[in-house]
Amino acid sequence: MSETSTSTASGASIELENLTKRYPGNPQPSVDNVSMEIKAGEIVIFVGPSGCGKSTTLKMINRLIEPSGGRIRINGEDVTDIDPVKLRRKVGYAIQSAGLFPHMTVAQNIALVPKMVGWGKTRIKDRVEELLDLVGLDPGEFHGRYPRQLSGGQQQRVGVARALAADPPVLLMDEPFGAVDPITRDHLQDELIRLQHELHKTIVFVTHDFDEAIKLGDRIAVLRERSHIAQFDTPEAILTNPADDFVSGFVGAGAALKRLNLTRVRNVEITDYPTVTVDDPLQDIFNRLRDSGTNEILLLDKRGRPYKWLRRGDLMRAKGSLARAGTLVHDTVTRDATLRDALEAVLTDNAGRVAVTGRRGEYTGVVDMETLMNSVHELLEADRLEAMEHQHELEEARAAQTHAEQEGDGGEKKA
Image 1: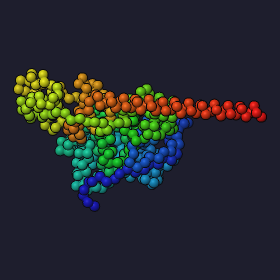
Image 2: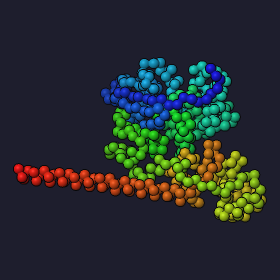
Image 3: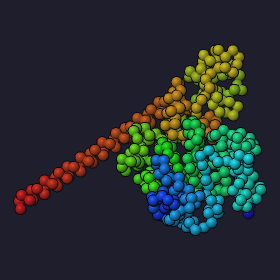
Image 4: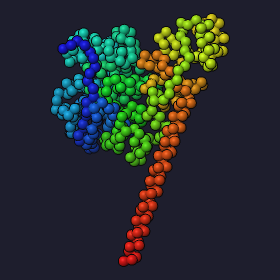
């Protein structure tokens, strides 16, 4: 076998057939007769109230919890009766707080499953470096670190890398981003979307956060108690046509604004902005700002990442050094971020714009408030037209029913 580590395995279909879990002493099953088909290469989100059985259902797919009844098929193969340890090595698994082994380095954590399945040393080393690069961590910098030396977001990235290490077609994720701060969570969500564009795995993802479900899911399974499926559909369909009051409760108010989670920054206009770097002489920066025709300029660090916004007054007060001049860039978005992420970033910034960055955090452009508000107005207008059309259909249906009843009454009178 070649000692290269190119990721080749795309997603696999998953079928759950009458999947059930009963625990001794409990008269009701925790998961009751769940059937579902998940397509190869799609992200399916399980969302529901606490205790509804969503995590139990997820863990039965790789048999961390053994089913009491029913069948699980991955790519048509019934995995209910095969060795569960072998099954788990073929199914990636990522959990909240990463679950990394504290006594192992980052590289050792990622290499765990490839080592178990018998990969050679060179192949494992190449794979570790490939995956660290894939999740946006410099292999040279992070290879030998221990989990305690990482931030929460970095630990989660390593956790995802470890889950992908043996190139499994299926990735199970149990509230993987639930323990990190909101800004880090947004960036991790964007990273997962970007990874999925490259890898096309089948991902089953558990969350209690409906906004996260809308942002990440190709389809969402809204689960009631005992994992009964209330609705299993696309985010658009659930937002616009919730199946019942239970699903409506998850959608909540402001469905039109929630639809901002369905549109990505890459789908709107990203404008260029005048930039300079920290290595540029102060006079060159001043000239660039003067010639740009704008009131501010974006200062990039040595790696081309957004660092500070500089205004004319900042440069006048700089006195030969930019150390204390300008306003630090506190938030950025990627092209895979949602318009809701971008809108939140813009609203927290008095200047009404946010820098867009690439995979390594490098500057690629800017999205401003006007662009975002135009998108909001388009969504609201689309919702208004859809509501009018729905109302028109209802009125036509009522008129047809009234006409039919009148025709019926006329016939009875003649008789």
